[in-house]
Length: 469
Image (cartoon, rainbow, N blue to C red; front, side, top):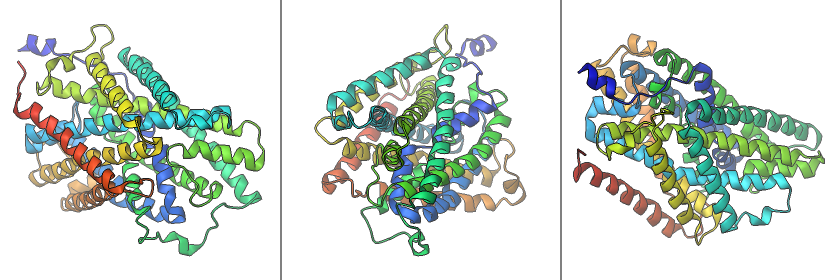
């Protein structure tokens, strides 16, 4: 038995508390989510608060509790497996992995379109060019894949650079917004009545799903628990610290966008780079647009690298359990990384990217990919919150890391109710086409149909070939 355990693949522990905090920030803070949230104007602040109360805080408590009860590499896969069995764990993991595969091309498009602003307005007409979007996206994708194959000691620097660029980006954005506010005034004048969102405008109401989705990502550190130093302690601390920082960054970012960009003019895919470009022309500050575009590109690249790193470990865990071909679980003999899983992931993203941008506008392809990712992403969270309820009701696993749950066991039930309620609402809104979609009937058919097909493929893996020998 000892020899068998010794022969199992092992991942290197390379991540400390600082790395986890930077990883969480890079994973969670999505600039494109920020541009979608800002579509609500000043009313977005009320929606940010609602998402924090009903999703960010409950999900943070859920992650802390379950990570302390069921620690180990794989995170929510193990939590779901111990609560509901292997079949449901596979469904949760499959949907989670697919949500990222679908979402990655959208992030790549943000990187490409934002980088065009580095050169001023001379290349902005290339934003709808199929070849530009495709070739640059593929270069970024495979460079990131190769870095992660060489190991986290190399790949984590891309994540950390992205997180640092994100700090600089929000700092510069806030300073520029304050300057604009006190010199030329806010592009969207503030009125107390505008704090109440227009619930009748179904052109923008679906964007609320993006606000909830924008707080997703704290669970990724638990997926990588096998590579975290002092995981049981550092993951809990990183979740708490990161959640506070993330909320502050979103508040700063939303305020800045509303001050700089007039209502209805903010673009969804590259709106942050657009914001710096607009301020460059408004206040005449040399190179502001270029600097802002560089920071947007680097920070979004860090987001992409962080999720690429974590998502590759998901089929690694499933591969060990033989629900997918065991080759996915192979560890590189020299670099200690799941290199086969990374290669497969890169190929799938490449195919999906090229299919998505063929024959359609980039923004519409982006919204379709983004909303389908939201739909798939929240399915595992329903499992996670139900696992929280079950583990606390039966008091299974280790001791809860949440003092409130230990002292008031019924409080866990209310956390579950809040989490599932906001997730269910977000899933419904994700399948409702926003104002960015022209053919709304086709959008609904595509997003629901594609989701069913992708989940059906997972069912084939599980039921037709339940075990690979």
